[in-house]
Length: 89
Image (cartoon, rainbow, N blue to C red; front, side, top):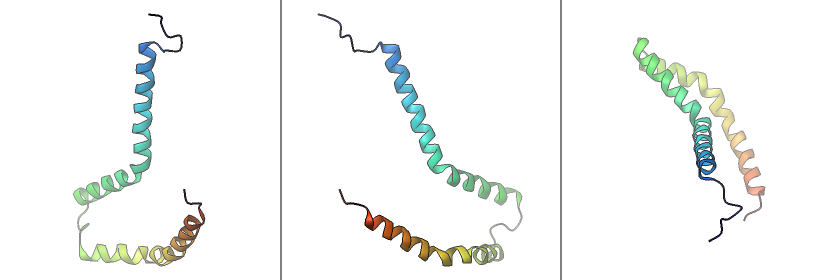
């Protein structure tokens, strides 16, 4: 039985799998880092801040983001137009 010349040694295969796993973890972290940061902020301010989860604070947050929410339909429609222009496959 002859050895396959193209086969990689086992330590090299394990290293590539480990690098692949590390890349997957990094990619997952890069997708969800903002949600993780937001969760940390909510936990911190609910623990340290007084009145963080109050009706008044919720109203202030809603008033602050109203301009962002009002501009979203324009952005969403332009994104949908771009998606509709993609070739279907």
